[in-house]
Length: 339
Ligand code: BGC
Image (tube, rainbow, N blue to C red; front, side, top):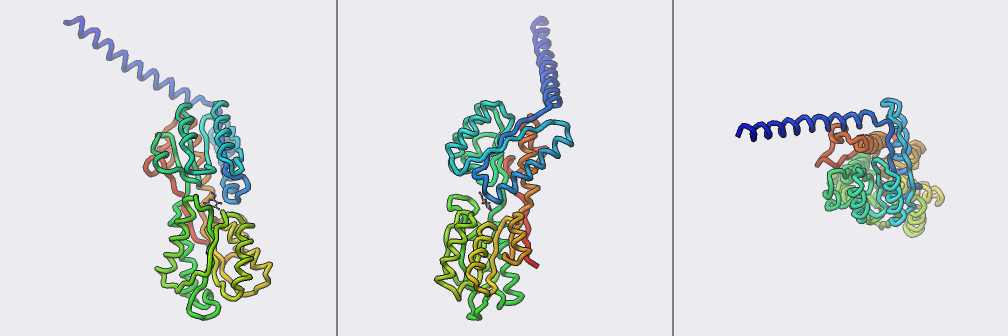
């Protein structure tokens, strides 16, 4: 009997010391990792907003190197709107033994393939801007998403116009017919932000008692030249009616402004966007755009980077970044007006 107790005690001690030793080893491994490798794939490298995030991430990587002495290899690739190409890029990151990947999905409903491969390779994934469906996000604890709250962006955008109307109804109702006549430019219809931004922007105007009349609208896929083509057509069809142009992002707002400028129409049509990209803010300064909603894109990029770096080092990501449901982060936003 005594012998049996002796063996049991020895096993318990072995487990305790073994565990401590393993933890120390792991700790040392984390402490001593002198470099991390992060792969980033973008749905389109020519998207203005995504480019702003990309350059901010590159800056973050440099700052992190300076601060921690840990070398960061960050490879950024462009999927050029092709989901198959993006899947191959992820395969390559995995075969090169990268420590974490950041994925801006081409098709946000197709994340499950990438997730399965990352799980097999034990590779943390930070999705951003194009949100995988919840069912996919729930598959593993090392999946994260960084983005913006689309309803918040839209309410801020709507309120820019509500405030302008309250101050001076004639600033929006240019022909004084008692209605604010608007056209709408929307992003890709498969993007989680498009539908919600449109819905809540209009709802905010209604809640703010702005008398609205929709003239028409179109999908311009976030793109400046597609938006410009729509607007050119509408200005021909409704040359005296358009008073407000509501756009799901800044690039489309700039496209609408391009067409307005080309048309030679001098009425002070009010154009609003979302993003606060450098180009959008420049449009605001030069009076092309009336207002936008700026997400803090330094914060946005820094959170993506922090999660990827902590994940690469096997650290507890939740200690580095405040996440909700342990995987989501929403970037802060504010309204910016021309004045
Ligand atoms: C941004 C757009 C961008 C799109 C790309 C949106 O959240 O507002 O400017 O083109 O994401 O996915």
